[in-house]
Length: 143
Image (cartoon, rainbow, N blue to C red; front, side, top):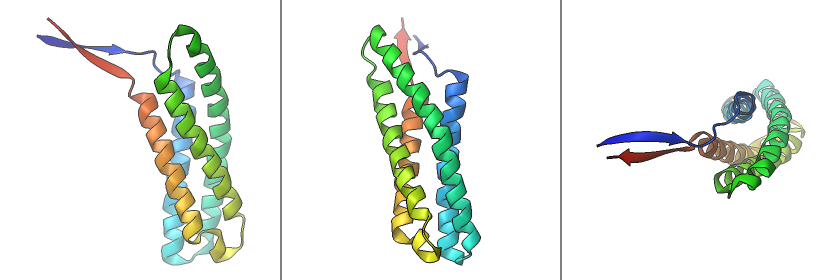
């Protein structure tokens, strides 16, 4: 008995690159928020603001591509996985937008617990959405 991997339609390489930018930039923003809370060096807050902004830019392009891909996949069946990851990443993007506004404040109030919480939520949702997007393989047994 052997197992065969039947992959669903994989992500287009450019789509995957845009998704990777969104995930990595939000994750790095979370790391720099933690560094700012531990050191109180204002430059870490500036890094976070720029990383979040970059994540929002790439996330906007990704979101446009994902919505078009989702609309096209409705013609081929029920796109529950695509719909799930598009919703997760849209929520992550909007939380990132709120986080960018939160980081535009001055000094300590730019991060604090609210900014850190927004960074954690947007990072976790982006990671979960990427996990769903990249794990579209199904294994079946061949007799």
